[in-house]
Image (cartoon, rainbow, N blue to C red; front, side):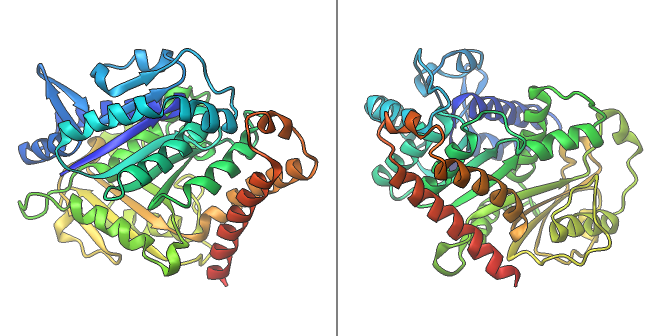
Length: 399
């Protein structure tokens, strides 16, 4: 079984690189069975090097060129997308269609059988959001037998780029039609975690990317149960269960992973399984994080969730939620828990993005930058309708 990835734009390529680099380092502390499974699922071996089963695509070469990957699996150009979804979708997409399909076919030939394909990108940039949306549609049409998922980074809600809300609405409006599930990572949460738990008062972009990639790895890392080859396939099927809600309305997934500690503090870790389980369940129920858990709020039960517990004596604890158990000490933690959940916690962030985009659309602010590349106001209105429908669906389930 293989899982494939497409890293898109600067954000997607940086996080993808950090993810696979972490996975390779983590193998040095894992069992031979986990190592073999990791290599089968995620990597090719070329001249004693592990090469990720991933396509690297960016319309600027600088980030891709810094990564050590087989050249057959990368595509770069010399002109970016100018933080404009329309330029990425309508210009770079059609212009590079044949080249993208060619490297995808090469990846499929190398894999033999590809079960699922994960797109890693930003929601707000030009290449990751616009070209990424185009490629997702292209893959859905060309390879209908492959399950398609997205890993999307939400922009800082305080704003990075003036067009980010418009790009985000266009991206969600497009990918929600074709993706089986969308794992959302939030820049604001990763930065706050760096500030409050990792003692990084001025975290760099690399620090933030490392937090997000480690959280992703905590989900993707293979689990061995009772020496059976793997339960990772079951993990992936459970993601399908998370999405199997009426009419495929609920596709937004979130990750929580604890504990989050500086490396030098891990030797003093003394959490019990009961304490970790209680903390992460309250985080999921209340939409809070490890640094600001709300213990006074009852919270909202997630629609579905998967818990993955790893570490010492994990088989001796009886967990309340559906849990996959593995004895591997992930990221040098004696005990750790990851929860992948489909819940209404995301509504607040979506509302902020939707409100800003809607105001800009009403005022026709910056729409001319999209119109000259073929995206008219009707397209924005349709995408806003999709986003507002998603918000409404999740809000209805809170009631």
